[in-house]
Image (tube, rainbow, N blue to C red; front, top):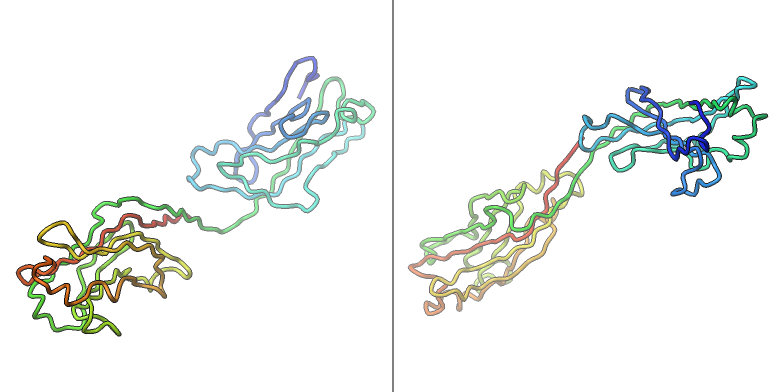
Length: 284
């Protein structure tokens, strides 16, 4: 690296690309200091990862590295590294690590120290790859997902004699859902009210502590007008909490009142409309 930075008026100098630890790198030198990182009055030097455009979207490279300067008089290197030898994680948001205050300009320009001789200085780096096995997850909340309504039409409703009935399974977001309806009520509301629940299918297959969030409406349709009976629910589902709803959704007396329009031609229509649902995308 030739030339006096003050004469050249160079704020930043980047080395040629070199390969180490299976990746491409370069050194980024601020001859008069990196003022943005409190480097004024010092030489600032950083290790920068290069050629990352072909790496996976969630790439990360973990390395331990040393930066050094050659004392050209004594043939020795001044080595600079973190005191604790911490591993540095390079990724798409953090592509450089180094030292804003590598060495003071006073010491660097003092020819007796041997770092700047004949307007020439020599910097270098040693890079050691640290393997780290990890997985990434991206949690997103989907608003108004496609095909977000489960419609469960129950014909011959007055003749249904099972404890409960289940709708077909629907995939909404990246999760599977179904409705469970108790025509004559569940538990303490048996014989008193219709019970309605939304269930996360195969919840027991979720990874430990994984949860799925949903914001949804449970609805019994009014088939005469739009005066539906509905409730809004916000809930985290998990392997230990697979369904959520209302055991006392609507009183059976009100439900079977023909003038109310909930049961028409002996058919009941129950719906679940999911407005928000979480989705997890996994990367390795």
